[in-house]
Length: 289
Ligand SMILES: [Zn+2]
Image 1 (cartoon, rainbow, N blue to C red):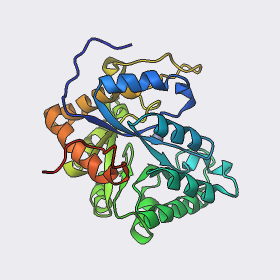
Image 2: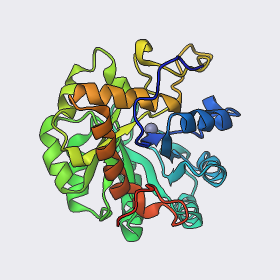
Image 3: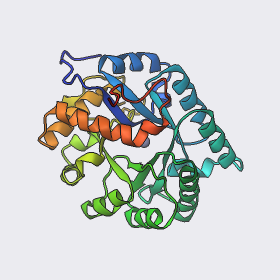
């Protein structure tokens, strides 16, 4: 369902991070992509999180030109990995131009096994560095280790995304020096996320990206324009076409006209993810003359 608000920008929008393959969307992806097209969403980076969902991510990329696929082992699911997970990951990466993610470190979840997480994370960084693929990183409460690993180990030259960046403000500069981009989710418009909002005011404009993280990280209800029936557990399901509202939130937060912000985000997205878009389906239609 769509509320009667006019699209606010003629510049195409880019979702730096979502999970269109998530089972909470199952069967609805075609309608979701149609809504995204109405909202002028040109590209979305769709992140796999384990061997179980990589085939679905690949399938969506074949079906919809908006989808930039990304394959990786999320730290929450590394216990599920098979002996052949690395070969399998490489096979997916070689089948289609793609990013590597969602990968990362997480000390927030219960019973985390940080040494195992680090091992899997570092191996995936290595694979990305060898192929110079943009990496999408999840990090919760492990910022010190993340910085150390990125400073000392291999990392892709093209850069990496810190999705839903909620780290300390002091780390923006050293991370940016290593090639970081920082994406803002609509969830940070929730009232209690004041610290994260303040942090985002310090992100260099040429490293800023916008994301939905759909089906997670919903906007506050007043900003939601597209809704889906809630999950059986009652949790809201974030619709990827709400990206327009996340841009609007970002523009308000940074005191910038949404049009100018969208133009900057387009350049940033192109710089980080443009290299893996296929030539007959480039990320941006704005060609250099
Ligand atoms: Zn995610």
